[in-house]
Image (tube, rainbow, N blue to C red; front, side):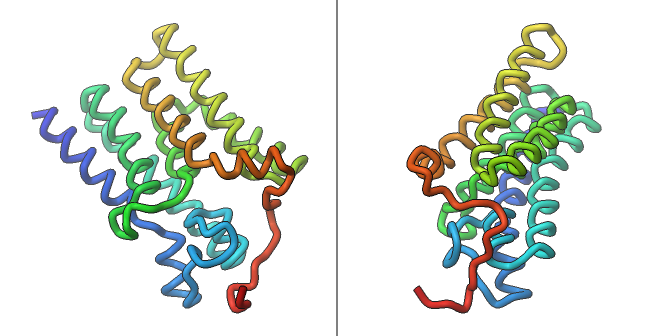
Length: 208
């Protein structure tokens, strides 16, 4: 029976995780499609550029929640480790390849971060690290990439010492790999020093 509930949780986590909150809030409250402006991503960073701070914070919280909540539900229900691990990965996959917007999506940092912290709360220490990196460099992408790599390494260490299951560690590593893959264009821009900096606003009414 646990296996059935595990599968239900994984499927639900995928479809809820696939909700593109940046697109939804932008269209409903601002009449703007964030995919047509700025970096064209659906996450909190581009929402800040296009929609402003209020909507960006809302997108961030909602994206974090869709990664965290399935893990919390799975842990509270004492589901098998494999089910919880896959339920952590599912909203990340849904967010990055959403069926609601043609299997496109965001970079998954918030959804993946929420899921990873749900599996290994110690990873919350990476949030202030990211803030410091962004404050110094103004590059959210750089902070995201460093946090993804560090999170994967920490998860492996915790699994090797028996603190968490390998299912959970591999899920966190999978999240890190997806984040890095989704940032491939950002990596190119970072290397060429053309990456967008944090806090630079975009006028969605301007025509390119």
